[in-house]
Image 1 (cartoon, rainbow, N blue to C red):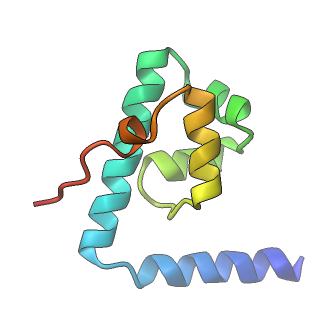
Image 2: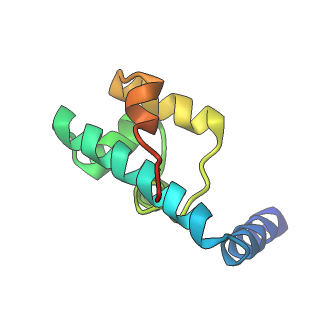
Length: 94
């Protein structure tokens, strides 16, 4: 149980330390993923299950609240059958 508590604490601290630019990048990434998921016809719930995530975790990815790991990003790309360029899309935040 301590592990989860520390993990939650670390996540909360990381979110608090993000710059506005960091938040923009994560929001844009989530937007790109959501757009592709919708194009493929999946609900959040069914896609989270296909990709192997809890719905709450996946929702946080799409809303830009999660700084997703590369390995989890690979899982999403594979489940969507999408290219990296499609997932990353334009991250221009100007």
